[in-house]
Length: 71
Image (cartoon, rainbow, N blue to C red):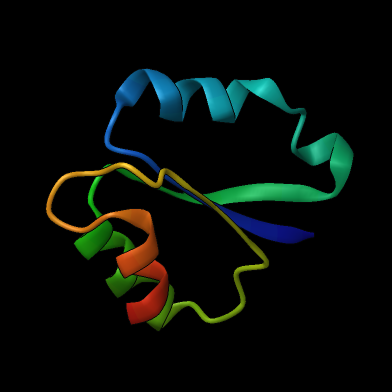
């Protein structure tokens, strides 16, 4: 089962991405949802077996591109 993390500062967008796809039917599970890039970085640094990260590019404090560079 592929592990998926969703990162977006808007709750409605997190909800939409969670509900858009039948993750289990496609062999995946969401293991983390974050509205903070700082929390997401901590999680991903501790959980290196995540296969897919859905990431908002426009976020406060640290945008998606800066996040990827730090990751």
